[in-house]
Length: 72
Image 1 (cartoon, rainbow, N blue to C red):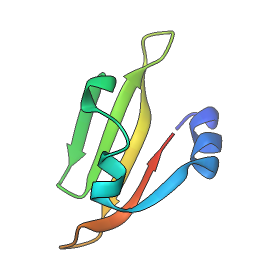
Image 2 (image 1 turned 45 degrees about the horizontal axis):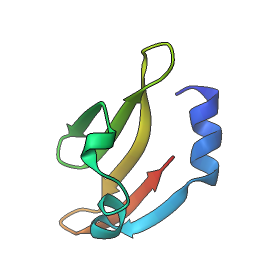
Image 3 (image 1 turned 90 degrees about the vertical axis):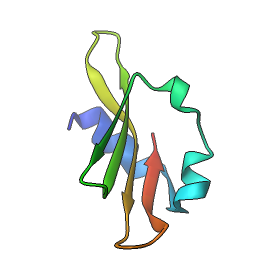
């Protein structure tokens, strides 16, 4: 990850329930979404140079609606 993303993640708001997290924004705000093995979800947006950057991430706990999410 880029240094700016790492710094943003340190100050990002964390959420423990997916309903709280996904209620914070609309998927129409994102350029792409990626789900990795049903455990990790990324919301991606293009930066000024056209490169996709992680804007939001949620990682589910096993067999649960809880997990850790942050919106940058």
